Amino acid sequence: MNGLIETLRQAVGANHVLVDGDLSAWEQDWRKRARGKALAVVRPGTTEEVAQVVRACAAAATPIVPQGGNTGMVVGSTPDDSGRAVVLNLTRMNRVRAVDAANLTITVDAGCVLQTVQEAAEAAGYLFPLSLAAEGSCTIGGNLATNAGGTQVVRYGNARELCLGLEVVTAQGEVWDGLSGLRKDNTGYDLRDLFIGSEGTLGVITAATMKLYPLPRATLTAWAAVPSMDAALALLGLAHRHLGAGLTGFEVMGQFALGLVVKHMPQLRVPFQQESAWCVLLENADQESEEHARAQFERLLEAALEDGCATDAVVAENIAQARALWHVRENIPLAQAEEGLNIKHDISIPVSRIPDFCAETDALLKREIAGVRLVNFGHLGDGNLHYNVQAPEEDDMQAFLREHEERVNALVFDQVRKFGGSISAEHGIGTLKVGKLPHYKSPVALKMMRAVKDALDPQGIMNPGKVLLP
Image 1 (cartoon, rainbow, N blue to C red):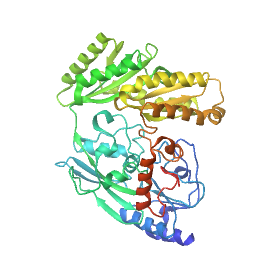
Image 2: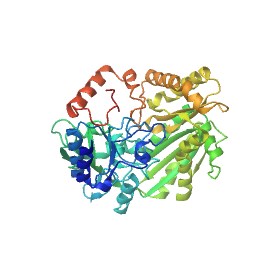
Image 3: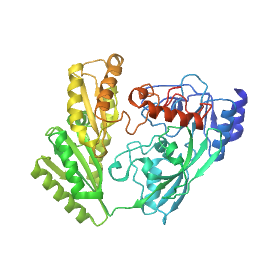
Image 4: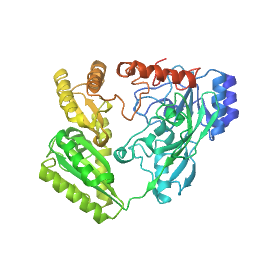
């Protein structure tokens, strides 16, 4: 392999081919669930350098693991422990290439940090609406490779819906330039959609043209206490009717999830946490004025209180209060981590069936595992729950995972299937769920996916072991 390493050094520069020292930042996943071993970490600076790296690896039949900010949740961007794979980290490719105001688009390198794209859009007077907790470190390429969701899907859709075009280096090292920015192009198969959500198993996304939107004139945030998940669903219906397209966020949080924030982050104020079984965070982005947005919210919340689907509510008075409310929601995963190891589920259920799913699955888990604690929160507006399972309070966390993780996953995923849902809403499959997918995806779908993989990556070098079993 020395010849390959030398070729890689010639392609990207010796300083950007890492083979010695502490490589844990690239070899270990964000949740610290797995640690692999790379042949080398290669950090190209241009699309042509990516192409050279892929061509060299293809010639040597060497596996490639594309990587952005390495903030994924399913061990999808870290190598296995064989020491054979090249980690292709794209964070040096971080240019904002162009803002096209007339076309309402922004074209960026794949290694651009999401927050950088948001800021570049805002500086030009526009909104890039993709927003998630890791936005200060995750990259656009990774967001597209996993079809990231976040908090504004209810209005703007997933990363897929925000993307108009891609630049991709194929598994053979060729460059496909699909950065047209066209909203209509009916000239055959949509190649863009093949690569979005493919988790680097078909090729390497090196750049993207993304949609922009006008900045709202006002964005207001409200927090409501609701007595049940049924009531939260009723409030969502009212929000759609009262706010229309202005409804950009609708997050639901269980009492126990919020209690973990109170316990581990006492500096954060959590409204109504002990007063109700659930709380809801709503966002209204208005194109008229703050007065209009506030009046809309007031009418909505008055109707919710009258109907009984909310028992109390508050509208943030300023940006600082709004940010404080969002900090509570965004810190639930961190608070859960402080509580100890847990079993995470990123699931989607038809919105109308979520109350029944929660009632039935909660009861099932509590019956099967005495004392189990459920950390349920997420994007109710688009049907995505982070339905996480915490060990009983006095249990050894490691022992709980060893004894119960597979069983809990099976119980939850079987329930997801029963209710017509998906075992991965926005995090992807990676390696954590690759063994589960054949049980919950139709054989016909898997056959077509395998045909695509074999056609585009016949050597099987692109992120092997992710999404599809070998």
